[in-house]
Amino acid sequence: LRPVAEMMTINFAFLALDAIINHAAKIRYMFDGQFTVPLVIRAASGWGNQATATHSHTPEPIFAHFPGLYVGCPATPSDAYGMLKASIRDDNPVLFTESIALYPKPGPVTEDPDFVLPIGKGEIKREGKHVTLVAYARGVDWSLAAAKELSKEGIEAEVVDLRWLRPLDTDIIVESFKKTNRCVVVEESLPMYSFGSEIAALIQDKCFDYMDAPVKRVSAMDVPLPFAREIELMALPNAQKVVDAVKEIL
Image 1 (cartoon, rainbow, N blue to C red):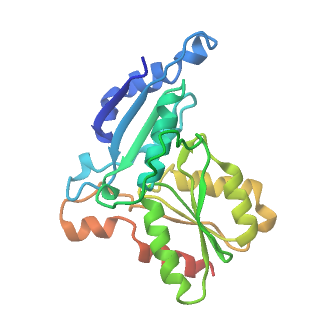
Image 2: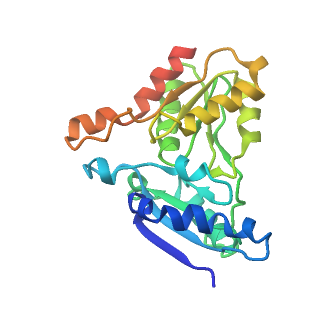
């Protein structure tokens, strides 16, 4: 069988960490490939509209830390369709996260039953030449909105949607950065030991001679997400914070 387990929200996956990390992600390796784990775990992630600190996590980078587990984070309905099909067909366990805040946002989806997006491949969602915005899931939404605002001032931002945190498409990041020489990483997750930290380290290692400015990061504030609506929004990223970060390094 090719089971698809649905966690409702990713916050509940913490109770299953041993099964996900210590078993599903390790069995194929521990048995030298003799066994496979074609498991998909669907989980809604991120902002839950005053769902408070224990129900508003965006912990995809935690799961992506462990080899053996794929982590997919679509930003559009079409990507979700193609990526989910690829996940179900693959023989490795996949954590497939869906941003809660993106559920109300419709988009075109092909009727082609054979449409599948490759695992571990990102996409340039917008071409640009002045700065690279690297993001996934809801971060892509903020990045595209920020790029639209920046274009009004003649700043053309390239938006890189990684789609997958593991396997990570390092080539698309490097190629874009070598073109723009500047980068802002955008994520809904927390800043400490994060996705943004990983991308910044990757660029410093692979593209040092191309760097014209430090890599900036836009993320949630380093606090448990508050309940009060005004400070909940204050603690989260948004398009304006991305715009401000771009202007800092330009």
